Image (cartoon, rainbow, N blue to C red; front, top):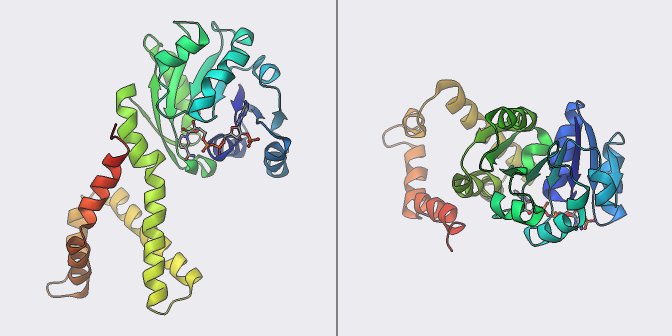
Length: 260
Ligand SMILES: NC(=O)c1ccc[n+]([C@@H]2O[C@H](COP(=O)([O-])OP(=O)(O)OC[C@H]3O[C@@H](n4cnc5c(N)ncnc54)[C@H](OP(=O)(O)O)[C@@H]3O)[C@@H](O)[C@H]2O)c1
């Protein structure tokens, strides 16, 4: 398939690099500046680049919009007359720009449009991507797009109104995980470890926790019980987290992005 990604920043760049690693599809990426495109081709010379969105979408099977939400309308204005709505599929990653709005901008109420929400781990093929088809998009096409996005990690097909929670837990959530790792590192450094050592240990603890839960299917509370000895060290640390309002802070953090 020929895939055109419009926008090569944090998200568009991650998508294109993740797809390039799989070396299955023909890839074209556009940006506003040559400097951004050069950074992509320095790593992935096989990816075609263009500063011309109109030319880049011609002949594409899939067009991915990966520009900032406030630029979606103007980019669509630019490309819509060059699109073939019977053949081409539009995916948009722009937060809170929903499929009805995209169809309205495109001037085609039946366009095959999807609202998708990956995270930047798409670059390493470990995204958690939410995929919401527009009304009336066929299950067959949705499955084809799900297969494509599976190259970038896990995919959850969902309703558009479920993407917001998914975005906070995954699109934004990955940043909260980075923050936790950073906090672990700061604690490690205060205890006398070098930052690089603390980073390695924090990441391995994170990987170990994920592997344990994934392999065993355990609830995290059950796994915690396995680590805590009565009167031991772990429970002292866990209770400190509770006294500091850790669970509540995480819940509030996730809900903050849903606030109007
Ligand atoms: N960042 C995330 O973790 C994340 C997660 C989920 C969804 N998203 C969504 O992804 C979208 C992009 O966010 P981002 O963080 O990737 O932004 P970004 O890093 O600022 O990247 C935006 C890209 O768009 C390019 N661009 C700007 N105007 C353009 C135009 N007219 N034609 C073609 N390309 C153009 C820019 O080119 P230059 O580099 O040359 O300026 C840049 O490469 C947003 O809508 C956001 O909601 C982001």
